[in-house]
Image (cartoon, rainbow, N blue to C red; front, side):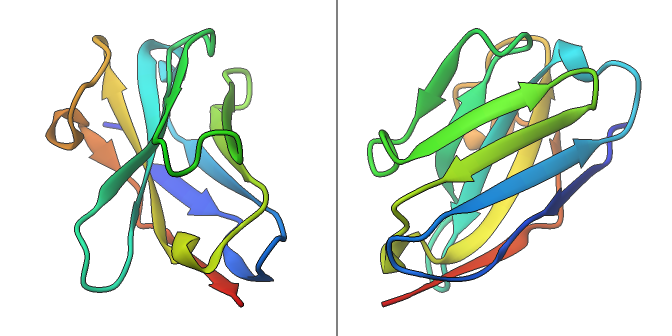
Length: 123
């Protein structure tokens, strides 16, 4: 069992930056693919970014490419999402998720989810 706890959300003006963190419990963090997702009010949860076990491979949604960066520190059991040039359209609850083993290709393939952290971008 893995527990994920997100932090770092808040209110920021458009053009600003935030760094989200997701701390994971357990000793096998380095065997998990990690992902960030977000869900805006009235919308479905959508993919933001994912990172491989070692951090050597990353993937981003087109809407955040070039503005967001996912990274991980396996010694600290933590994955990060650096968000720059934020837009009002980035407003959502942000969730981190973990999948052990194979690279996930869909939301439902993730095994564990955090409780989410709110990000609000004002115009």
